[in-house]
Amino acid sequence: MSAVFGKRPRGRGLALHAVLVLGVLVSMFPFYWTVVMATNTTRDIYRDPPKLVFGTQLLVNIRRVLDNIDFFGSMGNTILVAVGTTALVLFFDSLAAFTFAKYQFPGRRFLFAVLLLTFMLPMQLALIPEFEIMVKLGWVGDLRALIIPSTANAFGIFWMRQYISGSVPDELLDAARLDGCNFFRQYLHVALPAIRPGLAFLGIYTFVGAWNDYVWPLIVLVNPDHITLQVALAQLNTAHSTDYSMVMAGALLALVPVVGAFVLFARNFMSGAIEGAIRG
Amino acid sequence: MTRLSGPRTGSGGGNAAADRRRSGRLRRVASFWPQYLAISPFYLIFLVFMLVPIVFSLYLAFTSWDGVGAIHFVGLRQFRFLWNDPTFWLALRNTLIIWVLGTVPMLCASLVLASLLNSTRRFTAFYRVALFIPSVTSLVAVALFFGAVFSNSFGLVNVILQHLGLGTVPWMSNSWTIKVVIALLMSWQWTGYNAIIYLAGMQAIPKELYEAAKVDGAGPVQTFFKITVPLLRPIILFTVIVSTVTGLQSFTEPQVLFGSSAAINPNSGGPGQAGLTLILYFYHQAFDNNDFGYGAAIAWAAFLVIMLFALLNWRIVARREK
Image (cartoon, rainbow over all chains, first blue to last red; front, side):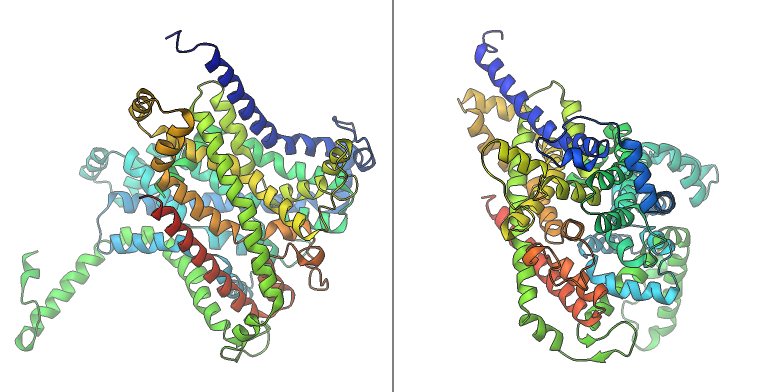
């Protein structure tokens, strides 16, 4: 074997890692540079030569963000939407997925095919009438307009069904049935404990999506004092587009929770996302 | 079940039996009420917030409506207007150019990165996480970053170019470079994600195939094109379709990069409207100008374009299979 791994393969291995490290640097650079911008003054960054390392102005820049937008208010709204959506999605999607994965009932195949077809429908077709529905419901400018329409989604059910088929043993369900557990208690006592890792993936996936959502909040949150973080960030940029340090300090604050959550759960999240992509 | 084996077509005297059969089946279906209840939220939400709106928007595309007053049916007028609307064609061209610039090089880079990752065992966990992070990053924040770095005056990119003696580029005001910046943004966000997906597909390819190829004297490039790419075709197809659908629906990138007060700004989508995409144009017409009829017409036109290109790509990738 040692003859095979001679000098040339080692050189090739080095080149291989050089390319990969370059890829990582490109991926990571925006985060580094965001921090550099957020910790310096705009004048120090936008000169020639610019400052390339972290500075000491972070708190000053953050203070100015807080002065210009209702940061904590919009962050509170975002948290409310993201947590509310995630909780409801986890419950409704896992319950529906459990039903599709483990139960036979008339129309099951047809209903699941309908569910898969809804993947194909682009959201912009629904936007105008959906807005009108929100007007009729009196939910324009209200966080319910963000949470309720996304409480049950096709991707989550599809992904969870796959997951439950492989992780909830039929024998356990049969035993529970013999013990007199009805359908909902089987879900609660047998399925739920067995699918916790799957729920973790779907939870983070939903949370990240709700946190980063922009188009629909932009349309439906018409009251400028009652918006989510992403919309507030875009507003900050529109009003102060050349005050880069402040804008990037805002961006940094909005990024940290999601990127942090991702890094913590990276393994689980990535294998879940891959599963969803390859099966789909 | 034996009760169900009565006469198939209850003509004449079979009516009572058919009734009984129907009520029997109904009772059988009703006995599954917990299951139907469990899956009902999705279908309810889908019906109210997706299906009804989509059907209604098809109707709206044939009307004139400002969202407040009466809805006037105008037949094909909106689509005739669209056909003669130079801004629509500009937005279509912009969208297609941005999509090609933003997806073709990206998917190639993803393939290369994935095959590199697949041929090493060192630091792969680190590489995978680091490459994946851009895809979970807020698009608004990323757009703000790209706007700051590609700023015409003293943006980091221009400062570096100047120091290399290449001169500065008016990134945010030239019709082509605006598209390049948006395409770079898309590529940055999705290259790693697609690479990780490809990598998962490559790891499912049996090792024996590679060993056999090695025995036959095939080099790494040859194995890549003769084994990896063909066996990865279903996954490549998936990524191509997803990139087509999302790439042709780009909205947030130009909307954030070039500000949102577009109702009063004739240059929506940046100088020369070079970054105006179909969905951004739809958004302006519908929600800045309250022209819901025309907005719906643009949305349906965009939908047809997306479907057309998704099918076209499917045909191309699937045909190469032979």
